Length: 304
Image (tube, rainbow, N blue to C red; front, side):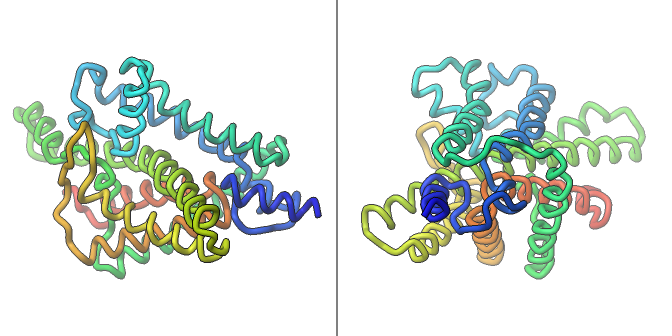
């Protein structure tokens, strides 16, 4: 009976939606406390990296800040709408992610002990989950760049690097441009892995489950299926159209095959989230973005 109640709590509060043996590696690492401790480095790194790339970010429009992802901007705008200053909202966005996970940990009533020796197999697991996404990208005729998760026009920022280095030789300019673009893609990819998982997997799927399961009375399996499909569609759509600062912005041109790839990627990450929790899905997203940035830079030479 206790195990059954625990599984119901997990389903409701998003630790993971399907039962696994209590105390096992899969149960432990799906806990919110594991997500907090494992992702903390990436959360702090992203905040610091964006600031160092744009020290004047508090005085710049959000869509001109290198490395800033749309999902982060949504959280920032929501916090300012609640009455926080822009400075507080910048710190509040990562705190919001942590607070949500702390609330999940408390309500799930799962254990608080973290075995740091689990972090290595977690990393290997996430890298293993990331490989099929990369294969999907190749099968769809392209490698999806992490920079596409950003609303920043990377081309404009790259042009600034070229102008500043105009007096140097061509090889040096090319190296600087490539290095700058790679760093930007990695930083943006980390931010996307954190905040897109928060918005499109954790929050959106949770709300959709409440709607389909609790309000409409659908079975758990059907509710999860609908939540995955809808969240994946919206995840893909937001790369082409998104709402920011009171108006709809069109970013990338909508190409059906790219839209389909992103929707499949969103569904894939949603399934990982459903079975393994937010920590594993977010880390998988992050590692995928980092690997793709490195492949684009050093193997496929897309920045050359």
